Every structure is written in C-alpha cells, then in structure tokens.
Image (spheres, rainbow, N blue to C red):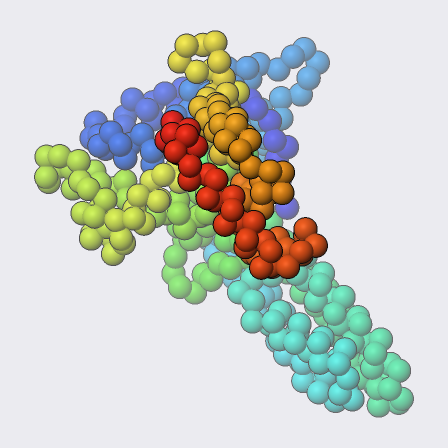
Length: 418
C-alpha cells in the first residue's frame, strides 16, 4: 500500500503552481451571500500558504516530501503495451480467483448444514461478487477457507477428502494472489504522478498537500483493483475519477471543524453554480425559492444547505468593544433578567405587606390555593389534607380571607402593584 506520513511542508514547485492556478481563475463572481457562505472553505487558502512557507527542513531532519517526489525519477510512465500487459495479468488473476471461489462454494455444499458453515458460505458469496480484490480482502478469503478446511476435517473420511480439496484451493488462491498483487502494485507505482497532478487542483481547501496525495493514492489503489481493460479505456482515464472521488470526499470529511455530510457538500456546489448562472441571467441575486426551482429543492432546503457552511464563532472571541467576550453577551434563558428579578422581589414585598391583614392560617390557605410561592395551585382537598382539616373548612377560611382582601384600603394597595 502506498502511504505518506502527514507533513505540513510544501515544496517551492507546489507554491509556484498554486500561485499560477489562482492567477488563471475565471473572473466570474458568485453573488455575495452565496459566495461568502458556500465557498467558505476557500478562505482557508491563506492559512495553508502560510503553513507551506515553513517547508524548509531543519538541519539534520528528513524532508519526506522531497524523498517522495524524488522517487518518481526511478518510476517512468508506462507505455501503452506495458499497461495493457499489466492490466491483462491483473484481469486474468481476478478472474481466476473468482473461479476458485466458485469451486469452494460448490465443495462447501457437501458439508453438513451448520450455522458456522452457512455463515462462511455467505462470506464466500460476498467475496465472489466483489469488483476487485485488495490484499486484506484476499487475506480474509484465505482465513475463511482455512476455517472451512478445519471444519470439514472433523466430518469423517468424506470430510477429510473435502478438507484436502479446500486446502488445494487455498494454496491455489495463494499463487493467484501474486498474479493480482504484482501488476496492481506496478500500475499504482507507475501512476503516482497522476495523483500529484490531481491533488494540486485541491490546494487551499483546508487540507495539507501531502494529505491530499495520500487520499488520492488510496483512490488510485481502488482504481487498480477494479480496472477492466476490456472496455477499451486507458488506466489513467479510469483512475482519475477514483482519485478525484477520494480527494473530494476527504476534503468534505476532514477540512472543516464541524463535519458536513458529503451529499450536503455536493448540494452546495450545485447551489453555487445555479446561483451564479441565475445572477447573470436576472442581473440580481436570486432568491432561495428561485434556486430551489432549478434544483428540485425547496427554498428552506437551499437556505439550510447554505447555512451549513457558516464558520463557527468562538464564545471566547472578543466583542466589538474589545473589552468583553461574545459568551458574556449571550443571555442565560434558564435565569431571570435583572429587571424581572427586581420586579419579582418588589411584588413579593407588596404581597407580604398586604397579607398582614390576614391571620397566619388564612395566609397559608390563600398562598396554597392561588399558587403563591409554590409550583401550582392546590385543590381544597390537598390544602385540607396538608393542614389536617376538611375541605369544607378550607373553603370557609378562603371565603373569609378573600372578603378581607376586598376591603377598600387593600384594593388600593393591590392597584399600586398592578
């Protein structure tokens, strides 16, 4: 497997190429509100270039990037005949592996039905239907056959015969494995330059250049596993799509602090292009509904997609005056505002003053019956139970207390509260 250690270094060649790419960009501009929200990832470019300026290695250190790119000199590009020969060998090895898997499935039918055997048969069926075979997949196939071989050996003489046949298939797959890995590795090694060319197009998207190359190499290996030369395409043509797919998905998954789903990234790209086209046609910024009509989306969905790309702001960020932090300006909904707290205490003082005309028992009944100082109003029965009297007695106390509160001087005090 072709891997690269992640590093934050750019060579001078990549920096020059990056500046050339930016100078050659189209002058067409997307409307401001869409450009600022959807293309937010491009704003990380200056930071990436600043990091790339630190690419000079310290004395005694190893510049992994330079070593990686120097290795290309020993790997010349494949000629058409060489590529065809490697692709043919890889295609034939893959076909032979599928034939051996089919033979293993046919032999497994002679085993006594067991849950473990049925599970292994399902795994072999899934392996046979794969488009390509990586080294870990082939290793799993060999482990699966080894398990079946051991199970069949415990089933008497007939099982021992099947075990020997499974062993032969497993050894044959080990030989075919070489016919698959060697041409696949050659195709990957000789096309690493293609990954670099594609990765350069994604500079400034929030990922280090070597990380982009790493993801592109993974896509290149997937392309080598699935390449079918019989369709008449060059390997580079087929591999480019897989490389772009690997890099673009990595950018979508890893370049942002808050991950945005890949399908949302794809939708944002469509929205940006549609918004730019409509702005040129209408000579104004299109509305969310107008964009949604062209993309078979609702206006709310377009708005949600655009808002998904707004960058988060730290609560520790300073406010406009520079003296307070943003988090200090956000209200705590669980707490009352100072005005409400002052009003509540003032009303409580007025009520305590008004309740002075009532006896202690009358005050308790009124507070419980009207929910003053408690979570909710109590029923007559609940108040009576708490005070160890009947509900009728509570009703009588309540009537007397309300009569006292309706006196003229008490009404005047209540009017002042309101």
